[in-house]
Length: 310
Image (cartoon, rainbow, N blue to C red):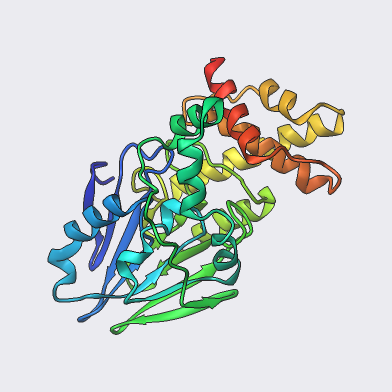
């Protein structure tokens, strides 16, 4: 649809995507919506170096239309750790996302990357490309619940809360006049979605909502720019996992055993397929409040083990 290469791509009039191939762990996308003399930035990146490079590449657009508003689509660091580089702007997120940002500060990931032994090796496998040292967590200055319309120098931009799904406070960004939606991590294209929060039913509903908006261009949180066909593929994956995991839970199977037992079929070629461990566990937890999920280190250990076994 659009070339999937690093940098800024105009996807509709005044609407741009910043893409970071290959879209794997931490390599997220962002967006820029340009109005008459002002711009809105959709998400910052995982560390300061990456965010600086993105802002520099956007400078031909932002010199005449400075970034005055930032929207963080959710609390994961690859969508907000660069906020300090745009701290002069109003930073907007959902109330739930703002609360969740406090749970995993950059210093925590810096420590995990430097941890001795197996834990450090594990986290460097996923996040060793990124430099979390010296990042100041810069929280939103404005929060909302449900929906919020933002005026970007005459352009209406709709912020729609669809979480909890990927995280507790996911937000999509809709530009009606351009028929563009920026989804944050409600969409992973050519990569496997990871359902940290759930329930999966909420995420499936979010996909249906995106399709109902009737956009021509959909910018995912990770992977190449897509359209509603890409949204449908993510919805199909989530529906498949929900059905398969529920059946195994009802049969009394352990969650990790269930994740290893599910044949991913058409979805097995997607990157990061080991995330099925987290997704199945989230189904179990959503359906049974007594289900005890493993800690995050064990979750990453399981994902790594599943991928190493194939």
